[in-house]
Length: 248
Image (cartoon, rainbow, N blue to C red; front, side, top):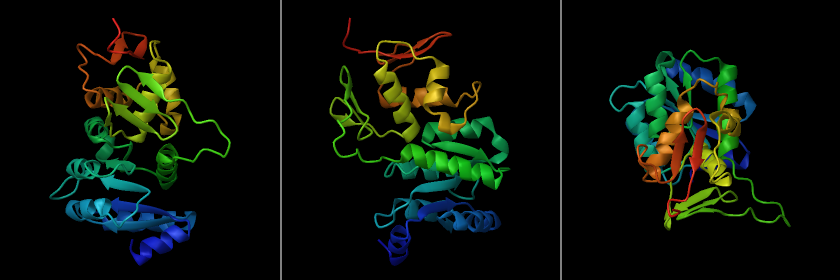
């Protein structure tokens, strides 16, 4: 790790990588967050962003990633990051366009924010994704959380890991929270509203399609077919249910 990285870590600061070609915005975000304990390092093109985000000697608590950049756009940057790292990513989308939000979430973003954001909203979103990504160690003497088993799928709430037929699943924090919620209720329907409540830090509203995108992403990672699902069934007007594919 670089000297700067070690200093930030020792100072207890939260290290953020901002990938955005708008230098003025990067300076504004950095100056706003610095007094709040955030160290913001900015890079201004996608290629450099991927290199910094995935460098083995760099540790980032979260990444702020713009969609619209010359050359390598934010979606491709995110794909390359997700191939190597599960660092929480907050995407900045132009005009709050729904298509940008859905594509970003499908690729693996943890949250999104229109570029007309206020600094207070940015801070709230960042703190939310950081809370979801945090993995506090169990207190001494605490009983370990029971592993959730649904056929060939094993979900461990304590380590926040999921394994399908001995193959680890690469899940975003939101995807893991949704899968864990479904696994706890295995064989029973979880309403859309109940699932939204499970990830309430995200500030969803009940008409937001994002949760459906996360379910779709989960299905892909489970090798599921929405038309003939083995794991996650959709019950019209009721919600979603996780089932054992080996059960009759």
